[in-house]
Each structure stands twice: as structure tokens, then as C-alpha cells.
Image (cartoon, rainbow, N blue to C red; front, side, top):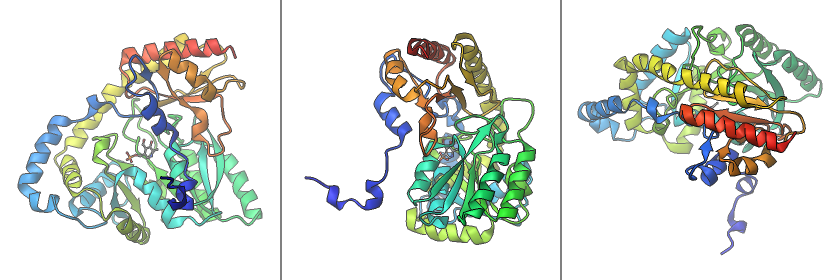
Length: 403
Ligand SMILES: Cc1ncc(COP(=O)(O)O)c(C=O)c1O
């Protein structure tokens, strides 16, 4: 049967997620090293603690934890998130609302649904998180790209673009940023730029979506700057966090911190999306913070990933051919590798797979797919041996490409 005529126009226009399709095609293929996945390492999952907490939750709160729950989330978890952002990020929790979401991914969908009309302008970092592009694209915005360097989004370029957009009478709804240990670049926006971005938001009247799932994955002695939300006196920043990298992504629990009026709108939108986030997972997550387990676990995750990042940076240094450059992150899960301008990482992928390695081609991280000579490599999931061997294979592939 041909189902085409039944599909909505919206769904007909959806392109499959490049990363998810890559994973489906290649991951698990024998002998292939994946630097593509972007998955946290299972070695970092606190399985024993989760087992203990699951038992306790069932015993103490079973009736509620297995029941339907309120759309904004379990009050015990909301309280813990408020404590966490107050303690860790110095965000005044009395001035904000919190809504629990089904992962930080849902924040992106709720944001698109809540704010975007077709033709509205969404400003994004270039490159940016692929699934954010896909989530917003459902609502038909015009994407405006602002380049990123080692200090995060180029706010000077942003300012020029804002002036131009204003002169054209365009409606800029929000700037989407991943300011800390960015996906895919691994770079972190400086404090100065964070404050300037906020100034621009006040001046040009737009919102900031601050997507911050990697904040705690810091492998240097210096803490990254506080979230932009910390300096937000006007309520322009919608901050999003997640348990995916600090507990386990399978929980599918994230959160939004924003002005209570915005939280109320998100609640109404979420009612129609999935009623609420898994009650059972929320109860466990609440106990995980309340019992001090999160505080104990973060240093362990950092200690686990830190040497992997070093192994990747060292391997790139040792094996990559002339003409290649890469970011030097101090946290997160990714390194962004750029080759000579003639390189096409999309067409090179097949050869890389033949050589036993897979990465994510750079064009996926740009809505206009304009950048062909870059790629994202992940160090969180492969073992140290696989990282070295994977980079060797990648370097061999690049050399064979002869650019
Ligand atoms: C920047 C960014 N935002 C959001 C997400 C989605 O996270 P979650 O697992 O909490 O839905 C990811 C996942 O990799 C991400 O990299």
C-alpha cells in the first residue's frame, strides 16, 4: 500500500536525522570504530546506586512513582533542581519556575512549538547541535547562522546580523546557544561574551535559549563561566539542563528554568505532547540529588573522561596530516576537526567506513549544509585504544583523500 497521500505536509518535509541514520547503518558493524555516536560511556552510569534508589523509591513512594503525575513534574524533583541551580550556578531560584521535561531534547520541541511562526528568525551557532536544527525546522523558521570560535559564539558578528535583520524588519524570536562545551565544537563561550549576548538580547529584544547539558563535564581545574541565566535580570533566558550526561540518558529526564509565565506556557504545550515525564524516573532522579549521589558522582565522571580527551587530542596531533586543525576543548564529549577547503567529509565517509572508522560529517551541523570540510569526532564512548586506532584510521582516510 502507498501511504504517501496520508502523510501530513509537515512530516513529508522532515528529513531523517543524519546522526541517527548513521548509527542505524553502521553502529555494531564488526570491526568498525565509531567516533560518531555522541553517547555517554556506560562506564559512567551509576548502576548500583540506581538499583538501590529504584528499590527505595518503590518501597517509599511506589503508589505515586508508578502513577500518572502532574505535567510540570514531580514537586520533589523540582525542589532538588531549584537547590542545584542555586548552589551550583547561583541562579536565584525564587525568581524562576522549573518544568521537568522528557530530556533536554523535549525543551527544543517545546520551544519551537511555543515561540515559532513560519518565517520567524532563529539565530543559531554555526555549527550547532543537529537535533536542535531538526526540532526548530518543524516550525518553519528562517535560520540565521553565527560562527563560533574558541570563545564560543562570535557576538560581534551576531550584532552586525541583528542590525541588518532589524533594518529588514525581520522578527528575531530567539538565539539558541550551547555555551558550555558545545556540541559539536567542544568550545566554551567566555564570560564576557555571555554578558554581551545578554546585553544584545535586552537591546534588540529577543529571547535566549541556553542549552547546557555538558556543563558538569569539565576536565580542567578551572570551572567554566556560570550559565548566562545567572546574569539574566529581565527573564530573557530559557535555560535547559539534563540528567543524560550526569546520570543516564535512558532516564529521559531534563528540565527548563525560566520565568514562571513562560513555564506556564510550556506546561500547556507539554500537556498535549506527553502529559508528563516518567514519574518513576523523576522520583529516582530526585533521590539521586537529595541523597548527595550526584555531588559524589560528578568528579568520577570527570576523572573518567579527562584522560580520554587527552588521548584523542594526542592522537590527532600525532596522526593527522598537514592542513588539518581541530578545537582543543577542556570538557564535553566532542572535538571538531577541520580539513583543507577542498575536503568533502560527506563523500569521504564511505572510504572511512571501508577503513573501519565512522564520524559525523560537518555539514549536518549547519541548516544550509554549507560547510563540507569538517567533522565531529566523539571521545566519550570509544575506549582509549579505540580512540587511538580510530584516529589512525581517520588520518589514513584523509591522506588517501589526497586533499
Ligand atoms: C546540545 C544538546 N542538547 C540537547 C541534547 C539532548 O539531550 P537529552 O538526552 O537530555 O534529551 C543533546 C544530546 O546529545 C545535546 O547535545
